[in-house]
Length: 145
Image (cartoon, rainbow, N blue to C red; front, side):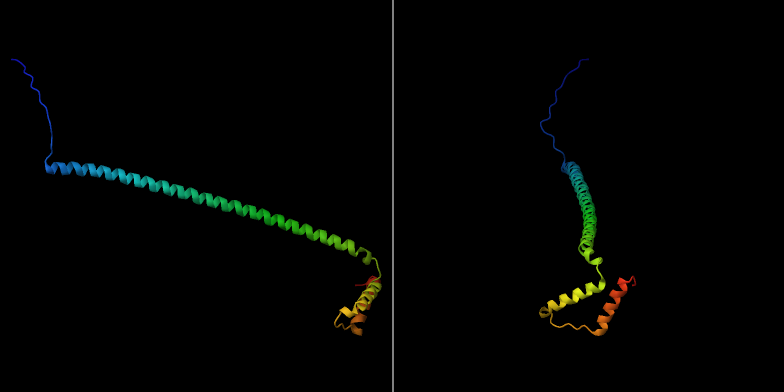
C-alpha cells in the first residue's frame, strides 16, 4: 500500500447568501458593540469631568466666601478702631471745656450765637428753656445731675 499525496488548493471560497448575511450580521454586531462601548466611555468621561468642574467651582466659592468673611472681620475691626480714635480725639478736644464751669460754658455758647446772629434765620430762647439750662449747669457745677 502506498501513500499518495494529493495537493488541494482553494482559489476562492464563497458562502451561501444566507451564510454571508449571518457572518455580516455578526461582524456588524461586534462593530456596534465597540461603538456603544466608545460612546459609554465618552459619556462617563464627560460626567467625571463635569463633576470635577462643579467641585472646583464649589471650592472656589468656599474660598471666596472665606476671604469675604476675613474682609468683613477686618473692616469691622478697622471701624471699631476708627470709632475709638474718634472718641479719644473728641475727649482730647473737649478736655479743656470739661474743667470749666458749666454756667460759663452756656454763657460762651450764647455769646457765640449772638455773634453769629446774622447767619441764624430764626432762634427762640424762652425764659423757661433758659432757666432749665441754667438750673442744669448750676446743679452740675454743684455735683448734682
